[in-house]
Image 1 (cartoon, one colour):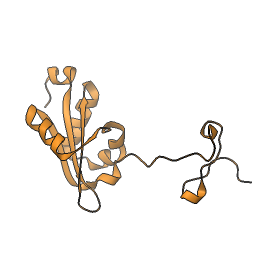
Image 2 (spheres, rainbow, N blue to C red):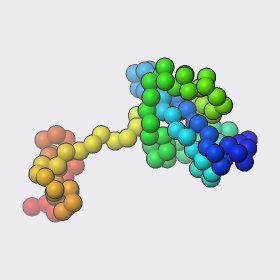
Image 3 (cartoon, helix red, strand yellow):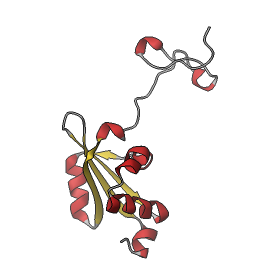
Image 4 (cartoon, rainbow, N blue to C red):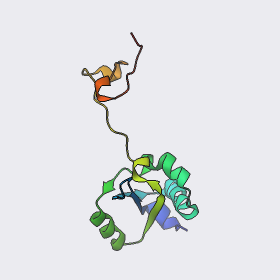
Length: 123
């Protein structure tokens, strides 16, 4: 259980996952208040469905294995480590590049040659 001081001051969470090729991926995030309590519950209950659905919203700071280990050794933290969720399931989606400048704000389209979706009315 997180103490009231840890909830108000923040707690460091380290997320460690493997990708589809077995390579390690790590994220570090300092969480406070209800968000820290929620992710502590995810950790305690092994709620991997929540991790899949909301992990990318919370764990944004991807770090190297060395950085994650340094942070882990520097003080108290929560380490979420599972083989049930792959890194690709929570990684941010690849960015898309608009065909023409400023079209992304006007309902324009993206380059279908790059395999990216097309938005707006079809002609």
